[in-house]
Image (cartoon, rainbow, N blue to C red; front, side, top):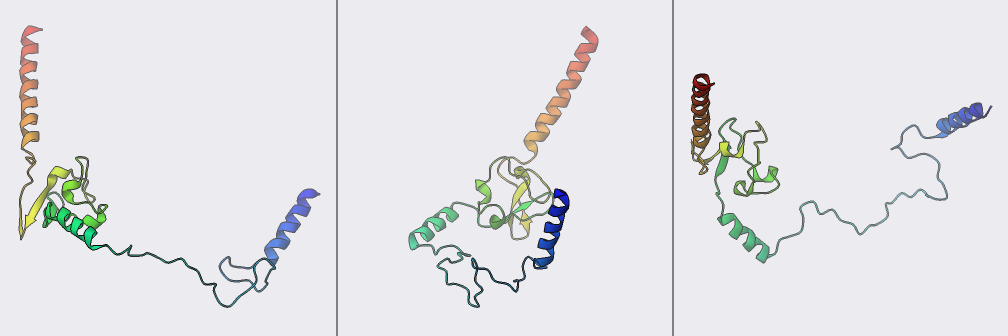
Length: 151
């Protein structure tokens, strides 16, 4: 009996409620009177942030002078590093774990772009990886030969 009463009361509430949660209903309550004018508020949207002072601008220009002002390009996929898309950090400020947002290539795969020419980075590029890879292959072959002869 209680469940039937609960279902009927829920049905009654649903039928008397507005059909849309966003459309204003035709009835007013004592808690929320209908007004045609929105109340004035003191809040403001700081969409573009606060204006920078001359001192802040000078500090930012000094910081920008320390970094490469050209473009950094991923050699794997051609993605051009956008400072605004990467937390406002200059490319040189990115840590060793930074990856290309487009192809997940490591930071060492980026190169400076000067005009139409893409150069190499100062971290050695792929040379250290290739040297150690070939060294590992040679060491593995040498160990295999030694193991076959001595064991």
